[in-house]
Length: 248
Image 1: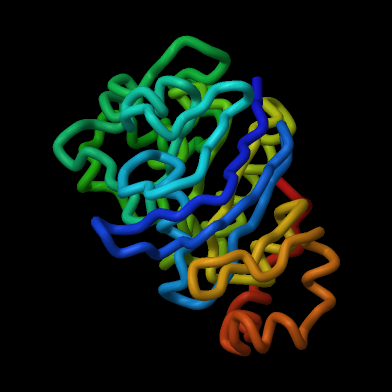
Image 2 (image 1 turned 30 degrees about the vertical axis):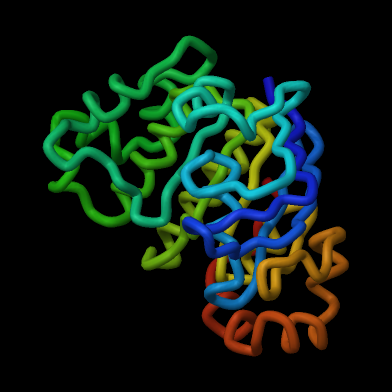
């Protein structure tokens, strides 16, 4: 079951250096939000803050009715947060089966479900993590997050470095997950066109603060805003490869 995620007046960063300043956002249960912006504006910092992996100076983070900001990272994970990290960070010396087994928690998602979602992983289930292709590693990273049976799924650049055909596979999997579980999700992604296609709402960060928030479809029409706050490269031809996708 998904839960809403709320961040209020968050100031956080690395040690004494704040990166995010007074940031607020709310994602309703079962909804999806894209977090956009140029490099270095605090997108990944936001995810790490939600997970409790960096210093929080002030503000609150709430999952459902549960306040998270005083919790250690492992307790936040147990409360229902799951991350698909930018670098995938699977266990290279464990098999696909073992990568999923160490993350498994009780709930509707199991290794069997992941193999149905990603048939290529089923064929590689006894292979070590470092023997997988980049696309297969990304499938495994997403599968590992799902078998924790989270309330909120945090995705950090899940399409980075993937061939268009694999991007389509990951997007279709996210759509299937949303249809089955209704997971609340936060997507950090530099491919702006794609991010706006597959989310319901979006937020733009600039210098550690939220400078725009609203419907993803509305932002997709604001090419002037995208150019000024994100940069023309973020909406270039590369983001228009592949098929159109529904929101996840």
